[in-house]
Image (cartoon, rainbow, N blue to C red; front, side):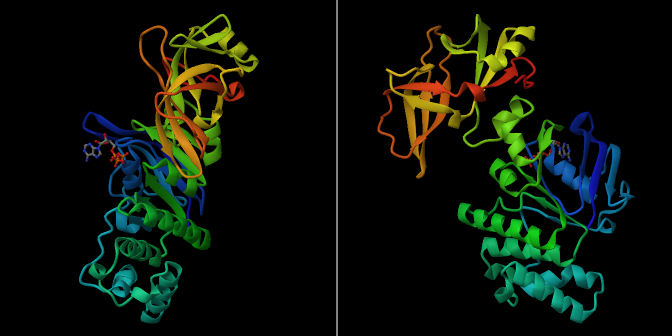
Length: 364
Ligand code: ATP
């Protein structure tokens, strides 16, 4: 096992910057997840660590060894991609053994190792089959097994579950987490799926347009997003964001207002602009009766029962005639209303997020 460190790493393709000034250190044995929208540079970072791509600038360390310029096969990393590409003419056992045989491992040792890996991935009963006789999930487990069997110092996984259907993805995700707990190999995992990131990671690195937006453990990234991009990306359904003007103790959203809580007064007083982006998590909105104190009037547009709870989409009727903001909220499972019905909402003001409207930086 080994730590993996990047120091000010950039990769350009001609004039295009794929990743810029990337610095982080994944401790020995940790499970880190790189997450972000398509094209943000996740795969480029992983491929640069693997040696499949060269950094234009900066230093990459695996353990204490700087590996810039070291060929991929000498870096002692195993990489698994979403298209797992097993050798079709070999059995599962032969696929698992491939990396070890290439290193001329002793046959008895290869047999033992394959058995252990196959047991831990629940594929021991498939060792004599060819890849075409396996389901997608089984093939993916063999691909993971082939990587693990080599006992690399570092495990690099690029969207390894994206070819699997929803149920299988959930199962394999849980197995992967269990596997990491058992073998403890330093792992860097790339996904665009924030649920995968939240459930698997010790630490999450959120990327956007080639740059790191935030590094933190899943809970702190959710509770304390550094900026609007992180806030809107992490959370399902995502945080509601509203362009808002502040005036005389109130934030206005297209004519409706939310009082500025005590907690945010100092921030608002010291901020140069009166324009903000307000952030409200769906679970932070409560449906109340018209006779109770409420902040926002809304009209139900869509109801999505999720089993344990209901996702309700509403629009906030505009009194200014500009745009009609939409809001997602989480209601109890038994939700009696229909699209078109009026709904009165109270927002938990203590949980209100405030961002600079022009930079997206978090203010509170
Ligand atoms: P996705 O989730 O869609 O796979 P990603 O976050 O992994 O995306 P990368 O594949 O790392 O993103 O790409 C980052 C940026 O670098 C993109 O804008 C991409 O177009 C660009 N890029 C990647 N590889 C090359 C290349 N070989 N030549 C030119 N541009 C490239």
